[in-house]
Image (spheres, rainbow, N blue to C red):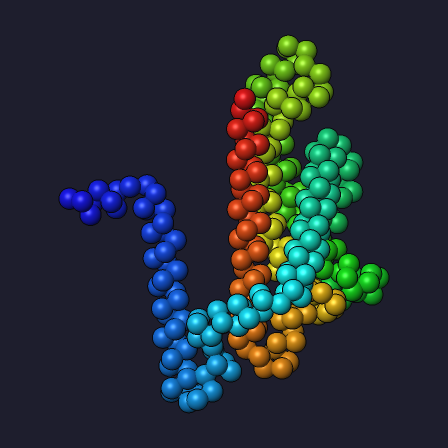
Length: 265
């Protein structure tokens, strides 16, 4: 009875939803690392698949260095800056193409081309025109732009026509119509686009750092760990990318939930 009551508690359920999958996959990782070290490549398993404990030890050792935090902060600022610029550009372009038919006819092919071009091609092309430190931000922004453009366009097109009619009947100005009608309608689509775009920005940004290798960059550290066969470091830096991505996703989700409550008020 007590156990069933505990499991019905919402807080306990939320904790279990995090802890149980994490424990399962860490256990699977540990078993795979043991198998690699004892069967596949006896005595050299850490070269191919280090254990979770070894990766944690390397991560702790890296975190003790001031350069680790500078590298993480610079990569975070660089990629998030590109994400923010791409989100702003995609939103602005969506507003323009939704309001002007000729702009939609003109810019839609460009957005489709950006969406279709592989990330690696963009990285190489941008590297011809920009310095290595700016390439990850530019590539991140380019990956985010089509996502936000598509989502915001859909949000604008899905705005309730009856609300727009009511706004015209009550003689709302453009700013009031935008604030009370369009923003609440578009905000869920914008938030969804940001959640998707953030993941793309991180993948594209770190990939760009791996190829162009700025002085302070997580991608540069990933590449160096790979060429020196420091596999635990490679896993540790990858864990940093994942942690920063989750942190930004959580922060954006919290921000949009507050904005959603404010829009309802």
